[in-house]
Length: 130
Image 1: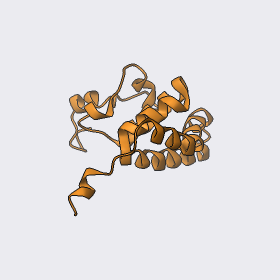
Image 2: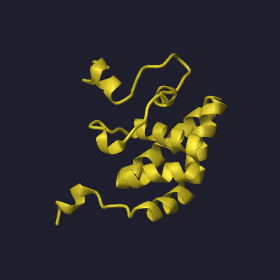
Image 3: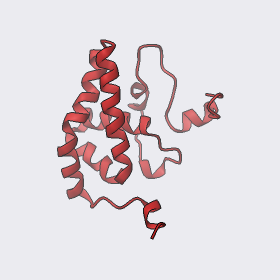
Image 4: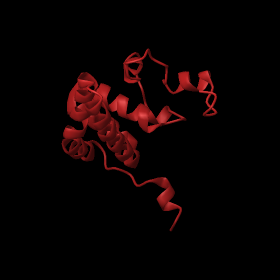
């Protein structure tokens, strides 16, 4: 944590508690509610695991509600989920691979549901360019 200029307190704030070897970080994230609007240090890693948690516990509708809140930032989570799925598959971590694959496979439906929940707002940095 210190090598990356992130103290332990910062890891706790973002929910990034260190797990035992062989466990994914998402296991710790299941313990509390998460609102991306309130997260000062939003990461793709945390977002992926929160989306997996939402998909597994509440289905595509729950994941879509998070995607609607995330807006354009959700796409980075999808890309990371695909990468994590590939890594888990190569390393024979079937349980983790299934979770990431479920998110990737459900992504088109999740995005459609998210559009119905709330229109995806453009990235605020894009508006600054005009």
